[in-house]
Length: 348
Ligand SMILES: NC(=O)c1ccc[n+]([C@@H]2O[C@H](COP(=O)([O-])OP(=O)(O)OC[C@H]3O[C@@H](n4cnc5c(N)ncnc54)[C@H](OP(=O)(O)O)[C@@H]3O)[C@@H](O)[C@H]2O)c1
Image (cartoon, rainbow, N blue to C red; front, side):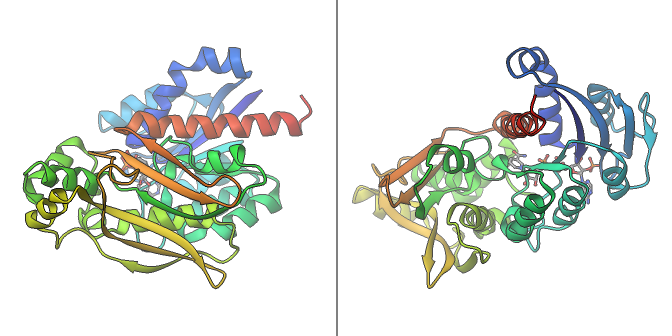
């Protein structure tokens, strides 16, 4: 089936995904029966363009990387803003990769709602809409007979949402605990090795993994928003999850690390979710955990999520040294899931 694809945001994630799509063109056609055409691309400062015949995706990537505008792409028609691009792109799938708004998930939630209302399925790598808008967006997608998918929003391409949806039929996830923020984990493991918090933060910044405002990492906001997104989806509660407590790592001292290590423990920034009185509640704080435990053994930028279930006991997933390639894969995996659903619904 030929998919019409549109993009809101063409930054690090969007461009990595564009390159992956191009590199996997033959496999997608041969193994999945997927061909694709790009009918819209919208950015904040690099212009917006739509086309019925199809835009040259890699040309758009090159133009953006060289600081040019995409309004003049071959076969493209410039449009005034992302909202108009959504309204006129006539896409099957919109890929939403705009920056996180830690306060309210906007404008991504508006973009996603707008697309779903037009019966366009949406894939996002942005955790904001899943943390702050999930119940409404899920209802909207279901009501319009389209899909809202977000595997890349937490732990990049590591299957956490897909694991729950496709691999645990009949089982319920009751609670979870995870080390979800790469920057703080790199800092904490750096401090275990004797580096200062400042030097370890500089290491993380050199790797390009720190949020634009490091406070979002250091004060636990990134971990909290990821945990809210996970809880909204995994814990099967209709009400949005709420944040009960959040402490970051800024108050930790080298002595805290050495005294934990002396007793076989380490300190990790742990996000926990449980259901209390019918509501999913999140806490994020530094915890002392055994060095050999599932939470304690992840080092550097690696992440872990441990889920307690009713029928499968405890299960966990670890993602070692994630990078942008894994996030791009998340978008690809969501695209294939949507394609397969569209193919079934069209009876092909
Ligand atoms: N980077 C990662 O490793 C990673 C991993 C997992 C998830 N994520 C999530 O993926 C999303 C994208 O991350 P990124 O690193 O690709 O960000 P980025 O490099 O900053 O790119 C953001 C893109 O969105 C566009 N944009 C910004 N504000 C917009 C608006 N109001 N309306 C329309 N477009 C807008 C920007 O346009 P201009 O180019 O014109 O500025 C740019 O193309 C974020 O939500 C992030 O949290 C990122």
